[in-house]
Image (tube, rainbow, N blue to C red):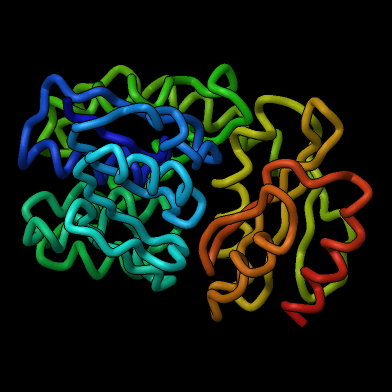
Length: 318
């Protein structure tokens, strides 16, 4: 059996799409979830004697099920840009991991495939708020400004769809969105023909209109903090909103706080774009935190730890 395990955001979807354009696996079992659902290997921990491709989820966060899967004689290819920690040494595991803050998983895949499907890598990089890296990867495509802007919109819409506390928050399930992309080698043809894009555009506009009316929680400081209500729109738009605010003020760090149904807090952090460091270090120091150096988050921060988080946030980015 073949299992394709991938993050449900633009990067995870586009990384898998590039790989399967190169090597079709029509019977592969798709394993994914919302963007913050990163312990995806737990879902297949009983699998044995299979081939598994893992994309855009932290090896360190999946270490326990990964070791179990290796013991069960699975052959695993792991491609990612998050913090990995110690990488197991075994012939059953092939890794392509680069945690540099200007790299995403789709850009790693793009290099492995010798830039064969660069349009999709550019799309993913825009979705991951790596605009300079996206433009650099697009140079060989010789795109007009309008077509480059179209890939930026596509990446941001695919990424927007991945955010939510549960699948019901999303407009499309990530596996359904991946399958919608599957027939298209050219992202511009997908943009022209797909009816899904209109639905994402409409949802994105409605959610962002609400988000842009939200004020800073504690204005006047170097860094910016926003607090959103407990609502599906707030969870859906959290990533794109955080990326937008980060681009507005590149020397500031940004934190977005959204209340969960159980009273805990969902935190999104963006390091200053001028110095993409320590977002993962900050978030991993709290329960359910993780991510990468430029952008990270905490899924369920106890409310009584918020003051501690904010103190550490402002201290790290002072």
